[in-house]
Image (cartoon, rainbow, N blue to C red; front, top):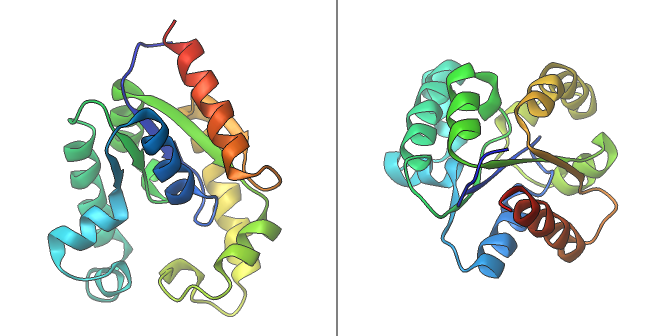
Length: 174
């Protein structure tokens, strides 16, 4: 495993990437970035608007450019969008520049966490459960193939998740 100053969080929407990322960054005294928020800040519009006008491919192009930009920064914690790993170039950038953590979470927990969230265009469907199951089936092999460490965020308290990630990160850098 490579020596790294960066921690990158991957996983489905609602797995806890932003929540865990902020806590990790605080514990490590590092800046925290969320690639989706960075895209919104750079474009001046929210993700659903980008999806509406540019489609998913247009959004993925912006996401790839943002991941390239953010992985050039040293000493950060980065929460990626759930689909960031769909593009090989993003996976390569993450793997080559940081310690990649897959936050795994059950569909049931994700549905509970996202049920009132209107800012997730991929869940704007008749059957969010079916959509999440499809996304997990498609993405899980990519998450697993990209990750240096995997942890289930469904049952554990966020402090315990952060502690386990910090230990794995420390072990990887020793």
